[in-house]
Image 1 (cartoon, rainbow over the protein chains, first blue to last red):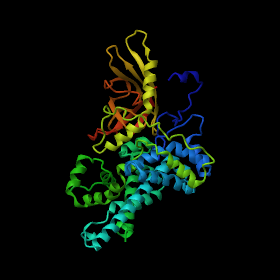
Image 2: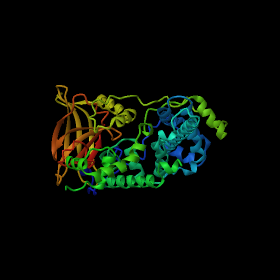
Image 3: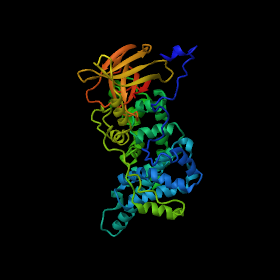
Image 4: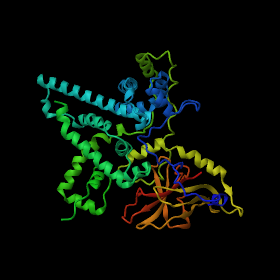
Length: 225
Length: 248
């Protein structure tokens, strides 16, 4: 284009990665709720959070509690259950902050992941209580035997599968999360991450196989024994 | 006996993506492939649920949640309670009606896009404000983009959104690219999250003008993308982009 004339020699085009489009890897997109512009950026908050800076916990809460609480409210409706989940997410993220690895993704994505665990744990706890109640009722002869109502395998599967997801490295983990949690097709994931289509497909394949194996080995029945 | 579907395609089927007509026909009659999909689908059904979707609309927790966190961590002295948490919810439901729905199961995706897809609107407004009338007064340039190569290609070019005297808008494209070995080149307008996209036409190298859908908000779909599309009858983006740029 025009710039070529100004330069003595046109250097080979270095295929710049500085386009405004987002082709970089995105583990999980969380809408950041930004405060004043002079505040530390999200990455800086993440670094200070890991380092144990208490102000970073407040900042993280300020920016991302809305995302976390929004998820909790979608799972449990507004009220004490959702509030309890939100509180647990930030408390357990803070005490377990050593487990956050900035290179694996932004802090809000990690918080959202913690929130999924808390939601799944709460569902599993409720399911256990429900079955205990029903067993007691059956014992008293007022209800059909509990075996008439099978345990909710999906509830137990979720706890197990979220645990397995945590063990998967990037970029496989980010890819499957985009498919599961952002409902993207493999082609959209390729566009979003800039990875070749074939790579995305084979990562998806391997991850789904891995999750299936985990279910086969530690599936719902074993977990609820 | 027709050939079995590839393991990769069966995984995509487990995720709910449509298969090619041949694969779909095979799958419907093959117990081995069907069982494979069912086995892979169990984890999809457990995890791909609306409650786990992100990003979603934020909800500010009540103040006592922070108070409890601060008390439990003993940090109330170190920082004042965060100001009534994020009221800055993303503007809800930016009109998405003009986004062509990509897949039958995309409803959750569209919701997420509604929550996240507000970035481009300001750009659109700015582009309109900056609009320059051509010297002859007949057309108005609303926005333009430099297209840079993507994925090891050396395609490049320029794109310009131009308003004609009758009010219609066209994407004027100057594309420097080799013809693909197979398939054809298609141009898309994509939103800032690279989720929603609108196809605007088939092109070849050189200068072309593509008429834009009358109601499209180019601020909402500010990314101009050129892809190589195989002739497979699948109307969605192949994922193989060769050049891209952002309208401004």
